[in-house]
Length: 121
Image (cartoon, rainbow, N blue to C red):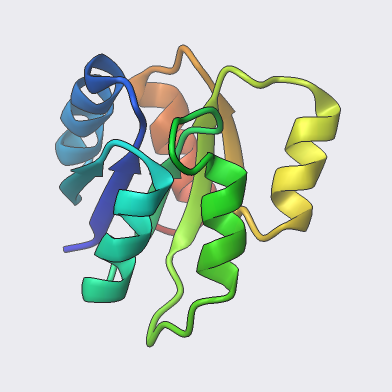
């Protein structure tokens, strides 16, 4: 079973995403910011990180940069899931190692399609 880390400062978004991701057959853990997420990634392996852009303590882009600098046995797929919809944001995310990008609000069909594109469902 694939293992997903949902990183978002909104408890509501984490709950909605968890419901969808678990419904697609993945196990889920949550983190409220990039710093907590980075510690989780150092402690255990994830197949997917669903990542918000704007968070306190450590933003999604700061997390992605730190993840890229961290030696991991297995690098997870990273999917930004954010309200930032400008082409500059999307380009920056992909250029910095994100595998996919989805806009909020999202639904099950959208997440499932994106997960199929990156080979996780």
